[in-house]
Length: 112
Figure 1 (cartoon, rainbow, N blue to C red):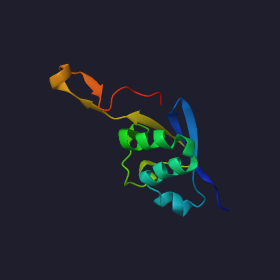
Figure 2 (cartoon, one colour):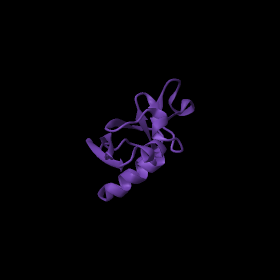
Figure 3 (cartoon, one colour):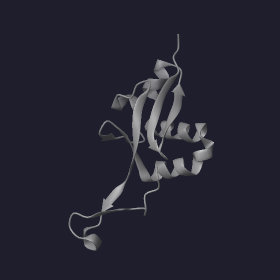
């Protein structure tokens, strides 16, 4: 009997999004981080612009690891109902802000 595999994306506009991934273990083992991002856009078209921004400007984090688009979710130990966090990419700008300072590479943080 097949199970509907889902993950929860946390910290998206102050909400949790439940993403339906697939309904077979074999598919779950092969699904990549990029495919997860595509499913987010597909299942929540009302947030398309925000999700596209996340796909470019944010990491999806599981545990304390930033996930790479090309890697399968199984590489990170993602299972049914795993919780994935959204984290903004930042860069260090020592020349402008001084040693130890950081700024958002893309400006102000929206409320994700």
